[in-house]
Image 1 (cartoon, rainbow, N blue to C red):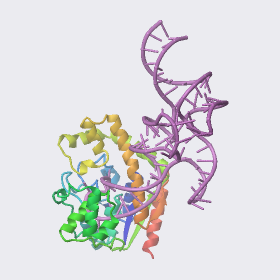
Image 2 (image 1 turned 90 degrees about the horizontal axis):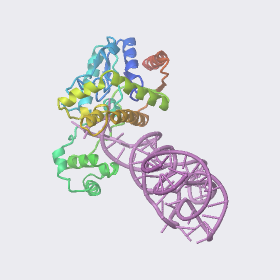
Image 3 (image 1 turned 135 degrees about the vertical axis):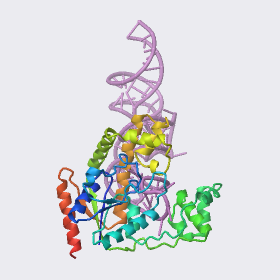
Image 4 (image 1 turned 180 degrees about the vertical axis):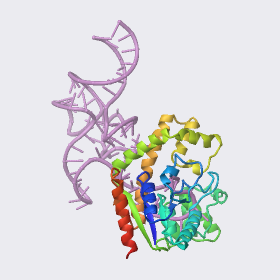
Length: 298
RNA sequence: GGGAGGGUAGCGAAGUGGUUAAACGCGGCAGACUGUAAAUCUGUUCCCUCAGGGUUCGAUGGUUCAAAUCCGUCCCCUCCCA
């Protein structure tokens, strides 16, 4: 049995995670694609030492921002961690908001095909979206059917995959590989949006600008620095945006992210939703514990 | 007081007599999702609905078969001269 806590950014997953870990005497496995990077702390809303309150957190600070990361790697690392915890007689607890990453762990995703290959993809620069899609239609009709012509990134990936004689044959994404409960945190949209705006102001107070400036000055420009908080301030440092505009964009992007997360969760996971009352979080914790215990006793 | 330019859907902004409920962008909402996922992409967005219907373009009164688009009056905004 695995317990998973998901929910939009800023809703309180971290807090609930720590509470559950303490109650069930276990660790937290992060389900976040940005917090894996060292040095991206304030901007990624990474758990602080104080917030951890003694609870061990895995998959946090495991990579330098210059290192590559991917779903496949995440899946491998987390599955290994789950095994470690199970072997130690502990309840695996995954807490995070990166839907696909978490889904890839719980369901039977096979990342045996190739990863994206930018050099191979360049060979198709001369084709427009429509032509590319037609080419894919010939090579891998099944993939073509499920990918929109305008989604060039995915069309290209499917084509370069077909170049290597690998056809998309993955159909197991709905087959679970573990027994799990997924707790989903939710709250009124407008209220969440307000909290997100306030959280950005708090990050600024905590030194967000210095943190990002440090990465910028080191010349770090990777996928890690394309995440929210970092990419907007980079544009400010590049002279494209005023600080004020960058901050407004950070807030905007956090709201957009929250909405996108809801869409993924709602449609991709069987979820036990818990309505969060920010003024009475203990109630949220109690409800979560009750749901998990009921599941464990089934 | 004199002169010039404006007021268009949540916001910005096209449109300057008919095929315009009104381009486009943003924001909102919804959706897709197997190697950048805090990514990439799609749909939708005046109101009621399936077809279809009902109200719109500062206000009001006109002209016209027909107006966001032309004319009168009024209200508000910006700039310039006094």
